Image (cartoon, rainbow, N blue to C red; front, side, top):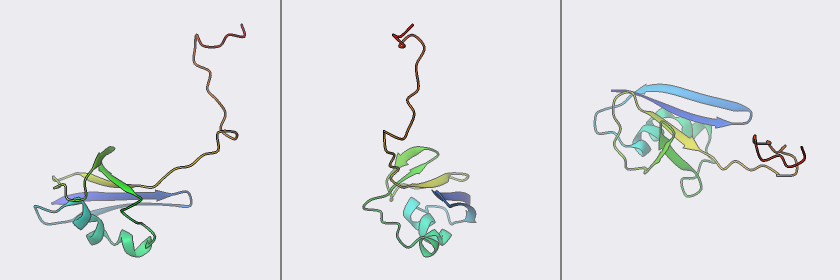
Length: 93
């Protein structure tokens, strides 16, 4: 069956389509994709994984067409990120 595996860093994004056997798990697909060779710092103790934007366990079975995603921690300094004003919450009018 064909599935996709995706991973993104600020300087590089990777999305691979690969062919895997039926009964393939998320972890097996990631290993088969070769992403861990390109990004050896990926540590599943710290990184989460998901299928189409929903977190999943490494032992979850895949279905044809699934997209496996590897999620890294995203950090942002609140002082450098502009706040969005939501309509109705701006008291300065």
